[in-house]
Length: 87
Image (cartoon, rainbow, N blue to C red; front, side, top):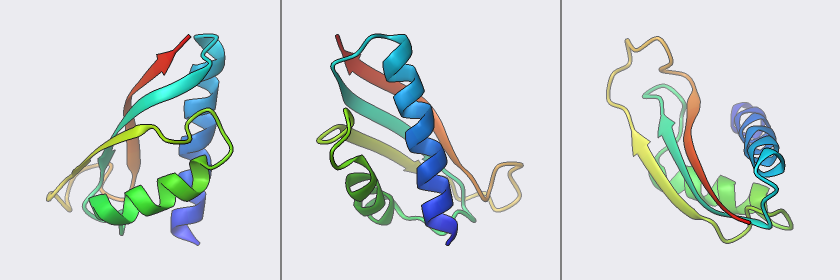
């Protein structure tokens, strides 16, 4: 499943950043959704909330921007732009 793979990778990156920052919790996450990622902002939010349940990212604010450029080099990807943490 494409979404499951994307979310597993994304959550691993978020967790690594939280570890580096000695964070108690993740407050906000900003992502860029490729035009061919098969994700809308709403769809991403549902998957994120499910993937974040029970982690430091549970309840984090989500800022997702959907690209409209299918020719972009990362059009199939979900790219992590920033993570805001609370220490």
